[in-house]
Length: 136
Image (cartoon, rainbow, N blue to C red; front, side, top):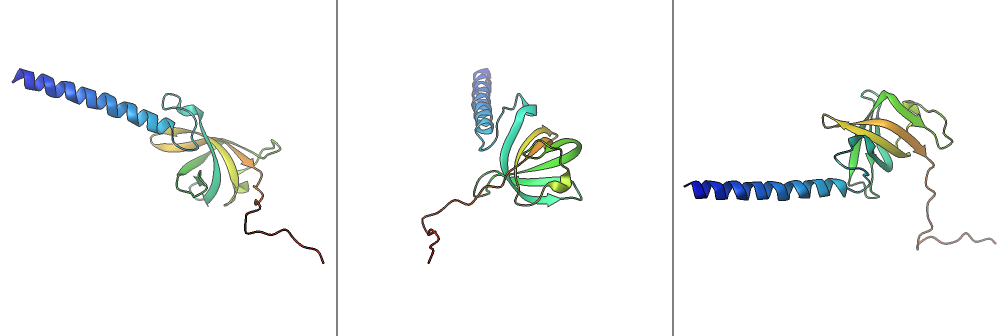
């Protein structure tokens, strides 16, 4: 009986160690996220603002071009918001469709923005179906 209990405990510890390592690696490899779970204050990503909620002072930012990975960030009075020229901006200056670089920290499962940089809008690229303008 003791042998079975020891065996089950050993298997449980092994599974916990394997699963724990996998979770840490998955968090470190999330697209658009820099940093690690041991350094939550250093998290940052670049993305497109999908939703601005003035009532709750939150932003929903999409990281990937397809918008599959989104992060909701709460903007506090301590959040530093800057334009591309380095000038101070306000929460009201952030609009849907804007490109931002957001630094944040996680507290109680919620992302709190520490700094938001408003980046210049990306210019549309010429695609294969787009022709050069012609002059007559």
